Length: 386
Image (cartoon, rainbow, N blue to C red; front, side, top):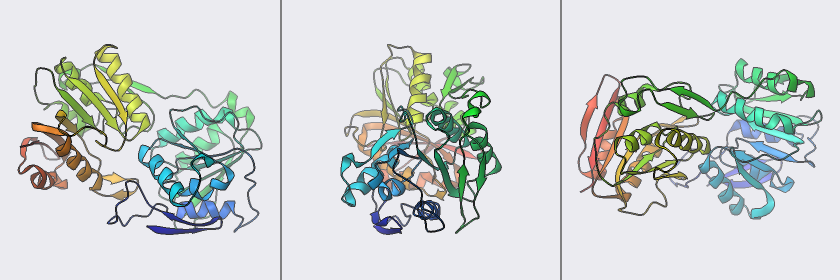
């Protein structure tokens, strides 16, 4: 638990899921800088009496601090949304005080104050600005915030092209603000939203060779097949018969789709904490496996909610970072979850960079793991539940 002191008040905040061992805070200097600006610490306060929309709030720090103004939060992260709910409750804010939307939901019709926490993905920023542009007006106050390492010339170019004239602040504690003045005439020149984006898979990746995948903005390697996934596709297990398969951290769903095409009797569950990812996975799967093929698409916290002992195979390409922090915490939780939901004899297949040492984690949980395939950069591991 950490106390976040702002011009709007003091708040107890944590990330989600809450972990007493986690030393990472639920906010950073970019959140502090934006709230100071809104509160008038460095100038006149911003009028927040109209419709306030907060985009990309990572753990709910901004939404919680601004709850008195009834903001609408828009996020691609299920974990971020759940963190916001928990932090609102922790600080005695009524559940109905704010509106929580995902990036797949329709935003408010009119936006008077637009606050943007710059995402890691430039594509996600582009998609969101395109979606929000028709809702802003000449008087809308638009302020972005991010670490100096997150705000690039390309970031400012997007604001400028899609919304209107843009400038940045001086850096404070390695963070900057972005100020944008919406120009209604930009509608004629901004162009169409290029997302979602589809491409054909290359040859040499098994049953999905030549198949088309769909990527909504913000998906990892949305414009091409990443080399780790390619390596996993080349070494997927050959299985037959009715079974329940989970594509954990599914991204655009290409791995789970390959498993379904290789074994038409399998029921595949696609799980990711990104709303954009699950939408991509559903589009990819339906385009290649058909509308009648059995599948489930879940936005959630890993394998939470999946019954214990109900799964035959888990396929996983775990992330090794959260925002700017490098950590194996997410991978470790995924492995623990897989061990819980697998039936005896069920298998977890993992692709990862060799240097991450996932085999050590898997041995602690499963007793042993074996290398299915490896190259100088990647390793595919198999662990069987006893």
